[in-house]
Image (cartoon, rainbow, N blue to C red):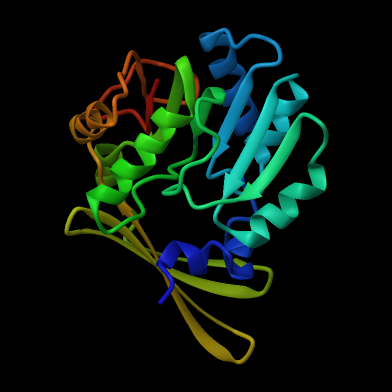
Length: 238
């Protein structure tokens, strides 16, 4: 059986539900991050779990040499329409190795981590990151802040997009933030589930250490303000 992320992320209904991604916010985050890190021209960047490439495309426009990878065939097919000499995309499972000692920077953005049932798989991802970074390379993870999610959880809502009525429920169960999406389309009922590990800063720090990664800075939002465990919407590790 496919894992939930392999099936759901490659579904056209996933792209319908999330069709209104905030591109302005994504670009602002990349501007702030590139400035903070002082990324030099022509730096090699891996956008790990890139989706359709909204961050990758913008980073390439800023003059960097960008590679985006994602498990979803549909997402990579769409992203490849924007490929050029300094921007390439590949279908890839983050648990597998990729380009050893190659990248100056690796970005894992928009909560694209913690999908697996076992910590060993999450650790495998981080060890692959360590292997793919050049000496003194920098990894950035943009994750959710579980404390903020728990305090602001919307248990149930209805969204109607492209004539599809999505019934969405959310809860935190057994250490995972779980979103269940139910809808009717093409004459039948569909149900998908998003399941993300509710990692705290301490838990991620432990995983990073085991993978040979050192956290130098922790931000709490896309403006790169300091992380506040109760108030910050994001947990951004550099």
